[in-house]
Length: 125
Image (tube, rainbow, N blue to C red; front, side):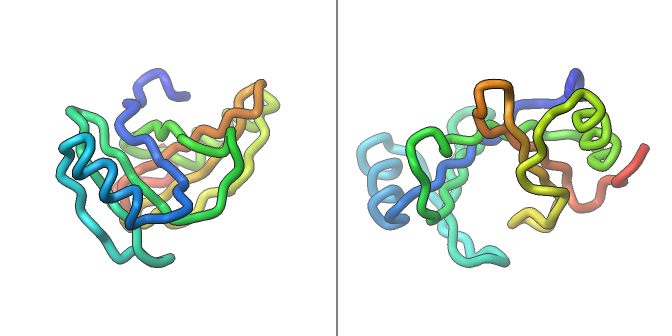
């Protein structure tokens, strides 16, 4: 399923995007980019090989951050395999802000996890 996936993104749900941008840019020294996505504005930063994505959205403690596993294709097959193992899917396969596909699920302790595949990759393998 995710044995060949890369953990390459962490998504943070933030209450105030401008405050978050200032913190990661000014306090941590990261280069932060504002982006207009299909659901509104968001921000990204690079921390080594890991992308940080900041989405303005109300969240309670435990909803964020969300580790995102990146796969090269077969997102529907991945989802089907997780469902077959009894994994709770919280968001079905849908469009990601970058035009790719994504879905969200929970681990046994109800921590949110996500899978992403680029827009040009096949949905099934």
